[in-house]
Image 1 (spheres, rainbow, N blue to C red):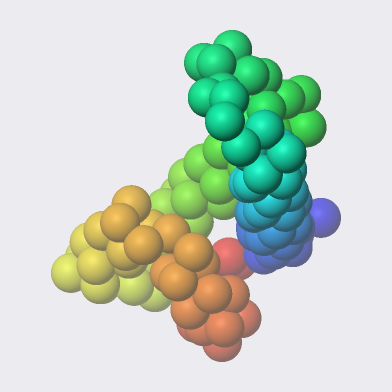
Image 2 (tube, one colour; image 1 turned 180 degrees about the horizontal axis):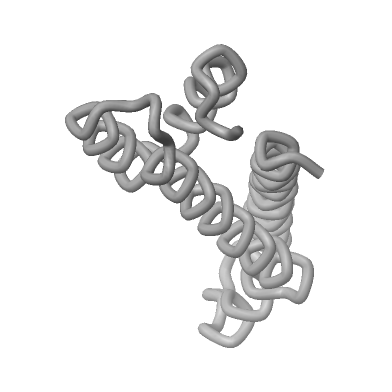
Length: 120
């Protein structure tokens, strides 16, 4: 598998993990609202709230999201840093972009990587 394809695979996995993470959060919030509507007078205990929001699906999606997000950012930084076609100032901008705005920078990187030979 080429370097570009490995970066693309990690980015797609991170995007899917983000969607799953958001779906779990949305589902947990809706179930919390329904539960609060059923028990109008009862205040929820801290244990109920923690068990509602930190279920296994939520924790797994957070773990996968964080690992894949970190992996494609590091891979992007390594590709840019090792590239001989990119000037030093541009390398610094790419690295700052991957650190601060990883998702947006990764999309731009995927668009530009084929033509600029970042991943030879």
